[in-house]
View 1 (cartoon, helix red, strand yellow):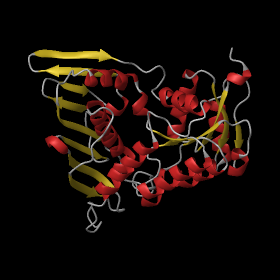
View 2: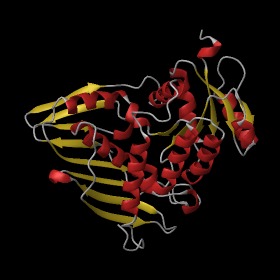
View 3: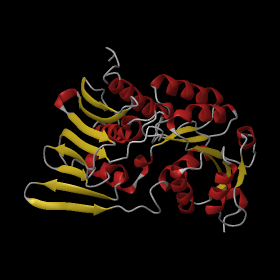
View 4: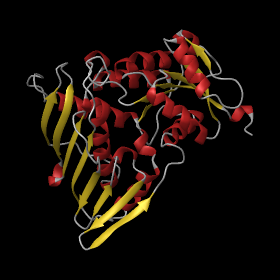
Length: 342
């Protein structure tokens, strides 16, 4: 059994669907415990705390944010609210000197992201966007294959992230007041895997696109129901993707190389397998299962960085978060009605 000084206590803001996955993953991270919950609805907060109770008392529940942020027993905060509220909660936590792991996207513009990064650096408080994909076993394996030249030279990338969602103007996916829209909610994964592959193939550096072709299908509420885009990079490399709430897809990702293709065959953002594909042989498949549900990697990374006194994760840096936000700003500037921005 862990000694008390080995326990890492998490406070959760927003005990909704994604926070359930976070709480389940805590069991797979040494020392991690759910210690406190902030919820606007006390009954919902108490139900969440009771559901994820481990080793004794359930997590403390409060409906007062200052109460959570002033709790000296809470080592870090996990923000799992709708995107529209990330900024205010991250800002409050950083101002209270509480380290933060915040669901993706961190915020919805690069400018707001830069302000939060500046605050984290000024206060010397850890801040990381919870892009869990970066810490999956399948990506560690695929990264080694890419860096070792398994596909040869990178030519192109293709991916999809689509699911059919019932239209409900009040639901966070469709509601502009809750920062709805496919690009922010799921397209960020298509962009993140694009950047990740380019980094594996370019000694950790991701080149900027030289051009973007963008088509967006807009919902009646004005948010993007679907986005289809091609990003063009130096050397003729392209990344084509579609994200949307209007269709069903296998949701695979493929990096197309001069010698072979590397594929996350289904649900690429949470893949538990990697495939190498050549023309004359069956795909070579490598299994890379989760320890729990996939969220354990980002939790362990955040805890390790915080215990080391770091302000950011070297594996999911502030610069990476800001670059992703910058790409989304540029894509959204090409949506219908967005004007002539680029």
